Amino acid sequence: MTKTISKSPETTHSRVFTENDEIQLLKTLLKSPNNSSGLPDSNLTKTQIAKKVKRLKEKYHKFARSKSLIKTPHDGKIYEIGRKIWGRNAAKEKELHEKELHENHEVSEEERAIEIENVNLDDFPFLVNEMTTNFQRNDYFKEGLRRLGKEKLKGMNEKWMELKLEESELMVNKVQLYHEHLKLVVEGSKGSSSNE
Image 1 (tube, rainbow, N blue to C red):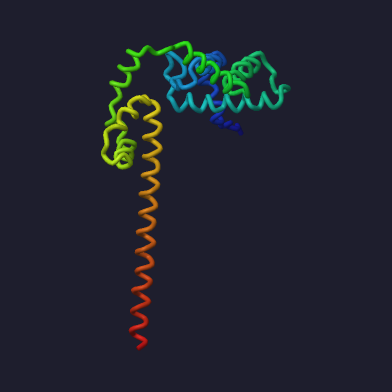
Image 2 (cartoon, one colour):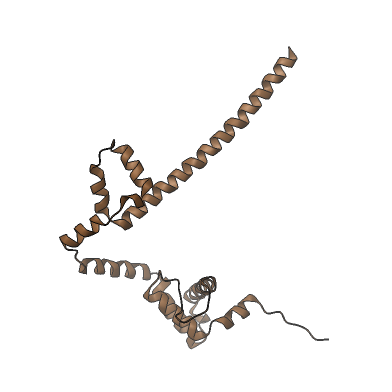
């Protein structure tokens, strides 16, 4: 009688990525942490790449906790590159690098004016609606919003949108509770009239 050995997802998945692919993926992440496209010239799906990145991150953290788990040169490479991406000092280094880039790129007054002019406040409806309410329809605030830049406005707009969604959910819950209690009161009223 022959035994069939079922392949675990890990075994199947590891064949999709070669050791070289893993290192290339880590190097791509190191250069551009927000780049989720992964490997150039690859037929892999974003899901496959995301799962592999997750596994590599878990592997790095195991190595970071216990260096004795690093058995092969490949493990060593994963640890070294992973440390630059996920290590304790990685966030500090990234912040410092971004600060240096920002300081080195001084924006001229003309570039700043063009940037402000290109901000379309219609792209940030939740934020603009709230500011319009607070500024009593005085359009003075719009210039201030434009000067903040698209990225800042995007974050602010998302926060107002989230708050509006939370308010909507609260309102729905309030209406449901009101309906539930009103129904109980009506039922209670029917019971008291039949007792008389």
